[in-house]
Length: 108
Image (cartoon, rainbow, N blue to C red; front, side):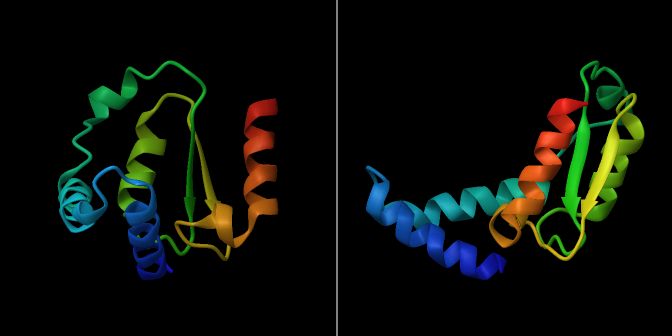
C-alpha cells in the first residue's frame, strides 16, 4: 500500500507542484525525516496538556509501533487506538471506520 501511495504522490506532485521535476529530491528529504525523527523524550511528551489520542493502524508500514506506544504511555491521559485491518492509509482503506473514530474522539 505504501509503495502505491508513493507512486500516486509522484504523479500528483508533478501535476500540482510549482517544481514538478523535483519530486525525487522531495521524497529523499521526506525519507530522511522518516528515518531520523521523532526526537521526543518522555519528558517532552509529559508536557502535553491537551486531550490526546494516539491513533495508529495494526498494519502500519510507516510508523514504528514502539513510537506509537511510547507516545501513548508518556502523554498524560493519552488514549491509544490501533485501527484494525488497515495500514497507514486507514482513511483511504476504511473511511467509515476512520471517520467514526475521529468523531468519537471529538465527542469525548
